[in-house]
Length: 211
Image (cartoon, rainbow, N blue to C red; front, side, top):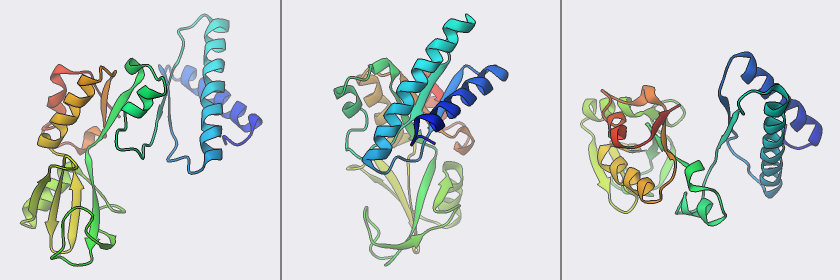
């Protein structure tokens, strides 16, 4: 879709039409994920052309300008500072946090630390499990639960099942980090993953949104 001017134009036009038809405030692009430099170049072109089209549509219709946002992937240690360094306005940055865990099947149940060898995906749906389900799994399987300081995350182990996830203790410093950068806020994917609003209520003193 992003590889040619014509396909980008058709996509952009259709998203604006749908957003207006159903009274949306804007559009979120979730491309998982650009894999090559060509993909990244086309990703940039798509966003540039989309912004121009959104501005022009608002002027021609005298309607409020649609919001345009995108979920992006990071490979660097500092997911946020790298965007600030290249000139993104801080208030336009939102930090993403998961309400799910990633699961793996350990090669050796006796070697279970961070980066322990795995032989495949673990329990859940294609190697993923909602946060609430992780807590249930831990309780039902008497799992060993570890808070890892170096990655500021949790992992649990039950036999050969290994799950890495965020919990209250790991989310708090990440929220504080976002606050220290003065960015626009943070969001969780997704609200249905929480258990008894345990993590959600951490947002009472900070901008919070859910997808």
